[in-house]
Image (cartoon, rainbow, N blue to C red):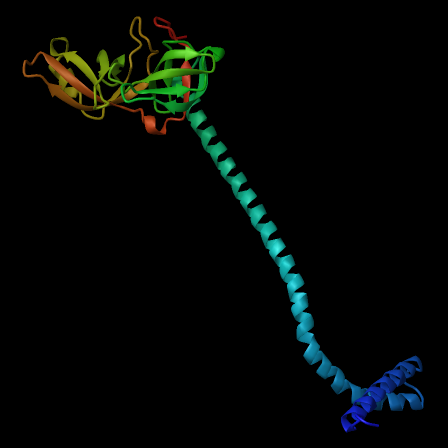
Length: 287
C-alpha cells in the first residue's frame, strides 16, 4: 500500500503487542496467575514494563509540575493566613503590654500616701498648650466629673499644677513649671517653709527665704538634692505632703539678708499621661 512503510507497520505491531499484553495480564489476574495465561502474561509484563517506566519518566515531571502549581497555591494561602494570625497576635500582645503599663502607672498614682482620703478624679492628658506663652495641658475630664477651677492636679511623681479652666468634657491645667505658678512649700528635712514661684525660661521654682528668720545651722543644712513638698499651710491651695521637686542650688544674696533656693520640679510634662484632680478647696483640712 502506498505510504504504508516499515515504520508504520512497526508502530501498529507495537500497539497490538501492548493491547494484547494488557488483555493477558488482566485475564491472568482474574485467574490468580495460574494456567498458561499466567506464563504469557508474565512475558508480556516484562515487555511492557520498560515502556511504562519510560512513559513515567516522560510524563511524571509534567504531572509533578501541575501538582506543584496546586500545592504552591495552597502554601501561599497558608502562609498568608499564618502571617495574618501572627499580626493579630502581635497586636493583642501590644495592647496587653500597654494595659499592664497603664495599670502600673495608675497603681503608682493612686497608691501614694499623700492622696489618702482625698476625693479625686482620674483623667488623661489629651493636649498640650496651644502656644508658647503659658505652660498648660488639657485633660479629658471636666465639670461633668466634678472638676472645678482651683483644684490641684497630681501625677505619679507629684504636683502637676492646678485647674484654671473647666467645662463639660474637659479642663485646662496650669503647670508647676509656668512662670505665673506659685505654691507654698517646705523643705522636707529642715521643715523650712516659704512661697515658691515659677521662673521665666528656666522652668525652675524660686523659694525666697529671709536669713533673719533662719539660724546659721538651718541655712547650712540646705543642700542640693533636698526634697521639697507642699506645706499645707493655712489657707493653702494644696494639701500637705505632695512632692514638688528637689533643691538644685542655694544662692546667698550680697546683702546677706535674703536667701534664694532654686528648685527643680519633679514634673516631666513631656511624658505626662495620667493624672488625678484632687477635689480640694483652699483652706480645706486634711481628713
